Length: 100
Image (cartoon, rainbow, N blue to C red; front, side, top):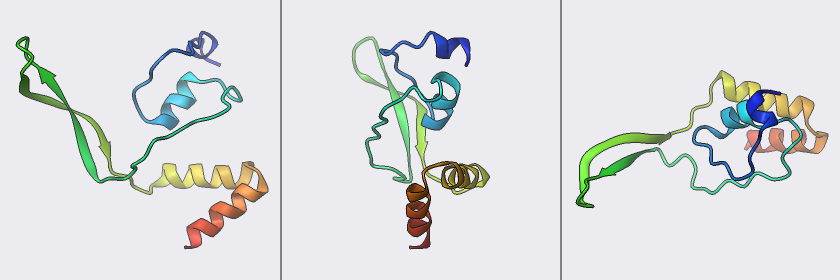
């Protein structure tokens, strides 16, 4: 457990990939529910726009996040981990969904 995990604040907002945030900042077996709000994989890059002091939108922007999903070695590793270490019914369901 990291120092950040032991000092967890229930009112903290994290920004980033949910799996990375969970691994780095949330202690194992400490979460009862994770709610994710779709859409997922919209294949769009979302930007954060800046405002001028006059409250007008500036042309300045940065990429906030990329919503394009790729199945790579990290995805495959996570899939296999859930299938082999999770409940049997979850593994069976994931294999069935993968076969579609």
